[in-house]
Structure formats: C-alpha cells, structure tokens
View (cartoon, one colour):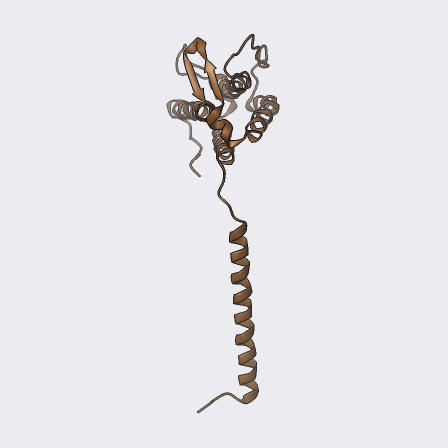
Length: 195
C-alpha cells in the first residue's frame, strides 16, 4: 500500500533525481580537482622546510623576554641575541658559499659593525637577505640539486647542492635546540614550537 499521494511521489522523485545530479556533479568536480593535484617537487619541499624551520625559530625567539637577550650560559657561549644573529647571518654566508660554488673569497658580512638591539631589528635587517636566499633556491632546477657541487677545499668539503642546502637547514635547527636549552636553563617558559 502506497502512503504517498501521486504529487508527493513526483516531488520525491524530482528531489532524488536532483540529489543524484548534485552527487554526480560533486564527484566529477573531485575527479577534476584530483587531476589538477600534483606532488611537490624537490625544490618546493626544500622551500617548505626552510620556511617551517624559520617560522618555528621566530616563534621561539619571540617568546624570549628582552631582558634575557644578553644572557649566556658561560663565558665562551653566544648570548641569546648573538645566537639569533649567528643563525640569520650564517644563512647569508651559506648563500654566498653556494653562489661562489664554495669559494668565499674576501667575504665581508653585511652584519659587520651592526649593534645588537632586539629581535625586531635583527629580523628586519635580515629580511632582504632571506628573500634573496629563498629566491635563489626557487630559481634552481631539480637537476641542480644533484649536479651542482659545492667545493670548500679549505675545510675539505665536496657536497652536492641538495646535500648542502639540507646542511644549512640543519644548522638553524641545531641552534633552535640550543636556544630551547638556554630557556630551560634560565627557567623561563619555552614556546611550543611543535604545532
């Protein structure tokens, strides 16, 4: 026994047909969208890695009260602000090493003579050099990672560019670990960089 009127049955059939149409359209859109998706290439992965490392470094550095910027665990160690600058300046140094395929020549750091003030100043000063560094990476071909060699005879290094770029990222990560240890030693809250 049918409990629906013929008009109600017609509306239900139209609704069902409309729902099927919407489902079919959504399915086709998903298929089209998946066709446009692609895997990241090696250069994009390297850029993402550098960006994430720096984002986490800045999150950590931003959580350090200004009164601790000149703190250091012992006389031989970097102060907090010296370590921040070392990371920022080191990236520029590595960039020059890559540009010269290993030969530093008579490198003079743009940071020479710059007075230590605060994190904001350090980040603003380094922004131009960071942009140039990431631009250099974005301009690479994937084959460059394997075929370009960085020859640093003075330190006995001969590395593929891809390997060298990963070492640069690792350098900043190591100093992030150092900074976390500094904050633990000082006894101040450490920002959660594992978001």
